[in-house]
Amino acid sequence: MSELRRQQNGDLIWFTSPQLSVYPRLKHAYFTRKGGVSSGIYESLNFRFTGTDSRDNLLQNYDIAARLVGGDVNHVIRTTQRHTDNIVTVSQPVTAFTNAGDGEAGVDALITNVPGAVLTGFYADCQLVMLYDHRHRACGVVHAGWRGIAQEIVRKTIEKMRDTYGCDPREMIAVVGPSICRSCFVTDDDVPDAMRDAFGGMVQEYMYRQDDKWCVDLKNITYAMLLRADIPAINIDISNYCPCCGDKTLWWSHRRLGENRGVHAGMICLTE
Ligand SMILES: [Zn+2]
Image (cartoon, rainbow, N blue to C red; front, side):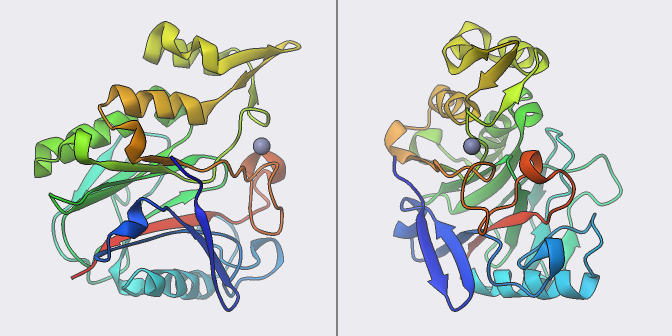
């Protein structure tokens, strides 16, 4: 388990997983604020359609990012995140900018074995988890906030990759990107209650009292869940970076900024 590595090319700054970087036919990136064309509160690499940033800016940002992982804006298929456990299997080449499950209840995870499809998810405190099985040439991206974690969307995505592509969790790599830390994630009883309902007593050690609130260590809860899903500890990278208390010039945080912010993307793509 090791920290993500900072990468830079001109203005563009992104982070990569040491584990995933071993494989030349897989491209991936966790993007920061740096290197896009948007301005104001969206400066500069914003991917959020639900704010007031222009569609033209957004599509330019998607293109800048997608080119880094071997495609362009027309190869992007993106989650429509609504804290669900809905997973979409991308089984056809992507030839136009696509919202997965558009108009439906929302899609929070994507999986594929199709080269060239740029799977794209988003984060601004929530966890963006990337999954990869080299032997079966399949990858996935999962958006997991506390609601998604409580719905076990990461385990369900691993199981979907097993059932769809024959993946073996013991050979899979899992990466948890920059996401809110236990000091910043101060909650009421609803979050600990949901964690206990989902995982039982094993999560108790990852939650502690602070005055009349709780601090919940979602990174370690996901780590424990990945181990329980049979992903070997040595195959897991979890970033210690926290968008909320980390470098404000790099990160947007929902907790720190509310809705006055952009959103970060993570992209993963199998190359030809
Ligand atoms: Zn923090």
